Length: 147
Image (cartoon, rainbow, N blue to C red; front, side, top):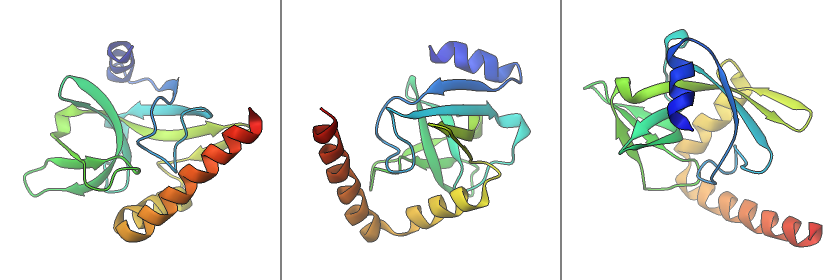
């Protein structure tokens, strides 16, 4: 599937798809979120952006936590504390532009509030460990109630 996504992005068009995986909790949710990813050439890539990148033969949608002096990018899922990916600029194929969640549309790239939350999140490791644990417990409780 992602080869087709990469082809569409390379042609300069946006791609919409449903999120798979939980590495971006609590900001992105796999059961509810439909993501719009735009081609990287239309955006300035910054720390805090969520990007789609090729990494070790597959693709990850993770947040940029650092840009190194040699031009490589350090990516990390919001639900991860230590695990990260280092990629070159050529490995980044798109940038998260927006999220559809129910009836809501969240602007990511130009959404100042959403971006600010992400930047604060990546800088507060201890607090985020506690908050992420609370989010996961709340999700389990909600699933049990809805079952």
